[in-house]
Image 1 (spheres, rainbow, N blue to C red):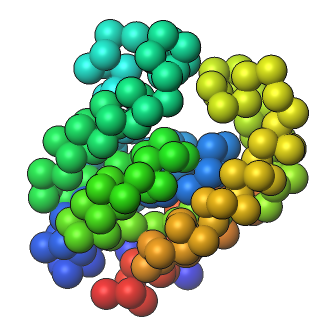
Image 2: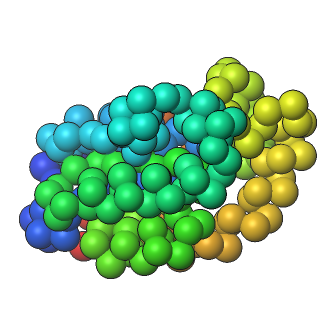
Image 3: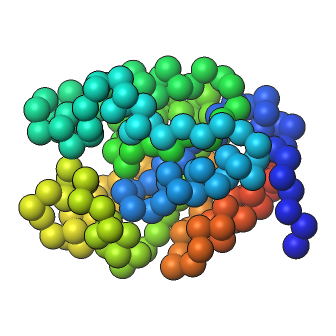
Length: 182
């Protein structure tokens, strides 16, 4: 299989590529690799929120609550959506916010990176900085979130399944879908 390292010309005119999906699906890891393949910059929205706030996502949740975090998240993502081609990884709840979702769907190519619950449970167990999982059973939380969020994530025009394989497999699938979509 020949690897296309160039971004399709129509994508360059379209602006950013935004990865959406559940926590633990690999948006940041896949996003970094996708950006490298496409020769674009990569931005992790959660890291940008932490820089802007001067504290971690967990601290923001603990001090100010989820609605405060979501408002800051919306403002940061709006700033990142400057029309320049880049790959942006969003937090799991970003696409659930109406205004943020409209902005992403209007100004970017949204890609839903999806995975089965078993894969997500395994992956989220590797990090303890997930505010929505604090003192709760990850499988229960992820199952409940998926029931609510997956129909919204499905609004993204491109859907890629992340499997228990190297992240490069997901990157290759995204490349194929971007080429087919354009």
